[in-house]
Length: 576
Image (tube, rainbow, N blue to C red; front, side, top):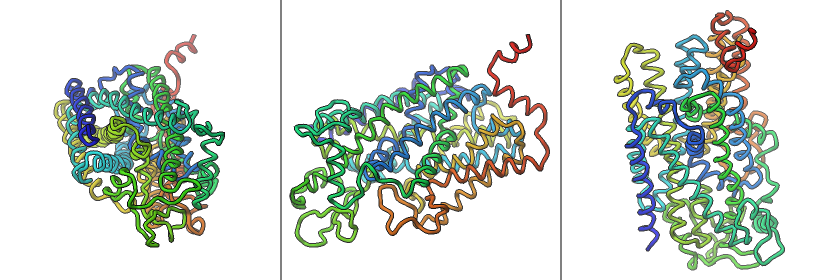
């Protein structure tokens, strides 16, 4: 069976599964729409959270980023997984104990202000909208290659699929759909990695294969990779850093606190029955995430080695363009891989020197999807990868769109504009808001803003600079008042956005090299995608300063903060 037909069958079967689950688990109340009824098992919620969080960025882009950045790509591994530790320890249990549906609802109640709630909604929409652009691109890229349709058609199909299961099922439908999507994406990611690790090193575990010797040789895979990339003029794979050490630190920190502040992830912890289950599901999510994240470095390193050795084996001649393999031709059709014969010799010259390199475009997003083809794996494995990439993009897109729609219907409409509407009207408003959000996301997918390079990392930076500090101070500081919280959120996200837009023309695209050093007008050498950590510091500073010169929060609010932090039963035990 040819690849195209097999891909249609595999992807079609997974879509049928998602829609069937959505119909079975359709929401009948606002509680089911927002938090799946609050009765999801922690293991199931951990799996759904992993799928929600491991977006197209994790599945499609991350290994590609690491492949081209080498050691510098560790910012994504450390930042995103480290953020989950913060989330599990410092946020999820306390927010679940408070027991509200959404992040803006918590912020509005904690800071006793509708203005704070509205500002949180605006921040949430900005962060989630920025993030969803990357998911829509992932859907378009996967469809355009494997279903051999135009990018626009692939994006439209993805929008229809998300519309059907997200609008129908709400959080309840999304939760059980995401469990299925996790199973699909994790098999799609690990099975090719096992095949490729066996081919290159003879070790079936990619995590160990990365540190093993090459098959039939005493040369270690990473040593071979360093030799290959340096021979072509690229930085050594195992020692290259991202810009400078401080920039790497700030980027990692921004990703960490941004992860802990992303609203579509936090809302998942309202779906479990108890506070203990919230902490447990965060732990399970980390386990499920670790399976992919410990595999990603191996996928990245092996993909980079396969790509270079296909075009120019060590000690051999450059590949003749007319003899290029089929995978090369397939990706040329997408425009994500482009060759220009600059010297007219008919061979593909590939090097770090952009003036002479004839590989004028090698989009890092193709690495995970192209790797099975480069390694000549069976067609069913390649089809499975296509289904996995789509599952990753669709699962996160659904979670983001639910966060956006619930912010509009529950926090703005029910919480501020029309508090007396009944549950049926609110549920209808939620579904309408979801439909509008999907149309808006589709528009941004067709017409991405000019700062779209690195939008996923930018979304984490925006969450880090706005939502994360408000949550942390709301839980751990009784002295922060409504004026401080509102001023802090506005200052943090405004400074971050201004910095990003100021430098949008020279934003560092992951996978490329700095030419001529770091741009002089970057603040302490911090790139725009890493500026969220600076924005967070400004948020904290402004909130504390304003709170000190304005009226303290009411006593009942300070008691609420104390109640959120103290474990159930402790106060009663202390009274005896």
